[in-house]
Each structure stands twice: as structure tokens, then as C-alpha cells.
Length: 148
Image (tube, rainbow, N blue to C red):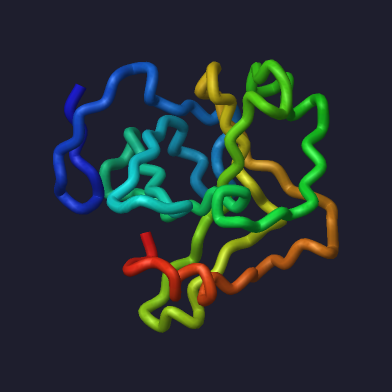
């Protein structure tokens, strides 16, 4: 299937690449299906809505970025997205973009869990005050040419 990204690009995806949220993202109740794609190599990707082609989110794979946030993933969360275990889960965090690169940040307390094989996803809230709500990505972006 061909889809149009928020950038106007056409990309070809298969049904197996579609990620379905079992509960909507906080504040986006009408969006359930997404596809992840990259415009460049690195830990940043785009999560493009299939429900509304005008909506896409920049996301960070924190573990791929060299971060090691202490995120406890509950067994209920693993089973909710029909993952075989924590090794069968990709973790992403939403990135807040800004024209000022120093203000680009992510919230490490509200990760998105995606079952690698099931392609089911959910956003969770991690109760760990050690994880910042606004983690600056300036150091990471200094190593990459663009924010996403």
C-alpha cells in the first residue's frame, strides 16, 4: 500500500508494518494506526498516522541513542501488546521539536511500547521521578544533521 507522509512523500508499506495502538496516545483519541519510518539513519524516526495523514510525531528510540532509562515494564503492559517478553518490545519516546535545537526534548516518563511481532502498541506512564519529563536532546542532535 502507498501512503503519503506529512512531508508529502509517498512511501510503500505492507500491512505488517502497521502499528495499532490498543489505547490512544494521550491527547489523540482519534488516532490508532501508525507506521514508523526514517528519513535518515539514527535513533530518531517518524511515527506517521494512517488515520490522519497530517499528523506525524518525531520519536526517539532511547536505548538505540545510548540512553539507559530505568523503565520498569509491567507484565500487564507486555501482555496488553501481546509481546513474548521485554525482548519483543521496541521502546520509543515522543520528541518535542523546536526551531531552537537546544529546546528539542523528550519525555522519558511516557514511553511508547511496540510489540515487535504483534505490532500492537500503547503509551505508558512510568512512575520514576529519576526519569526527566523534559530530557534535552542537544548532545544527541549535535551528532546528527537533523532532528528527525
